[in-house]
Image (cartoon, rainbow, N blue to C red; front, side):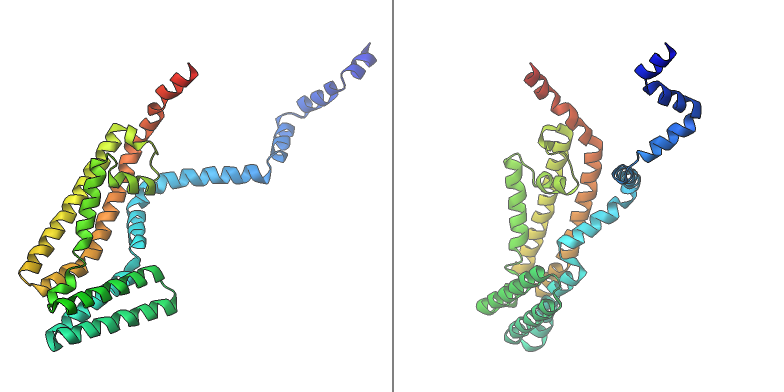
Length: 273
């Protein structure tokens, strides 16, 4: 009978050996079961936990970096401001004709330099085209303040886009910032988050409208120097607005994003019924 039991249950001996060897034997077997994939996934989870703990401290810096990248960086801001400064300086010395020519030469030179260095080609091309168009408008109108007619279209378009998005019940801040910070796709169904994006969009539209009003007033009073200064400062201003919007959006998503789990619950319950 004893021989038969051993023959019928050959696994009993291995189980007995495992028990006899104790926990150290089982621990060695578990260690051999840890494949590189399991170890890498564990490392990834540890990295995610580390990034989650440091996310709050790095959120502001990451938002500013993202905003600067979206505008092309400091070099793009310098390239954008250079034709304006050249236009103002040459206009004060040699008149409108010389200022228009100097602006065209400066824009073309900066574009060639950026293309040769292969740095932010898209921003360089856009900046050169805008500067050339502004110089052409100034020469066509015969007034130095005509240089700033096209830049005034930017805050006007931003104000119109924000207000239209609010009327369409799709606030611009939610469409843009929510995707940047990784917010829930169904953010429009989360009332606090939707209200936050609505308020943010309205505030951005007010800033754009105020900028447009100031530029129009300076244009009507022919304050060319102040128009140029405002035009140069608009780049850093929008970087700051973008960075603040991203930081606040991340805070709002962290605070209200968990409600996305409860938003989809009634729908899944109806489907199960």
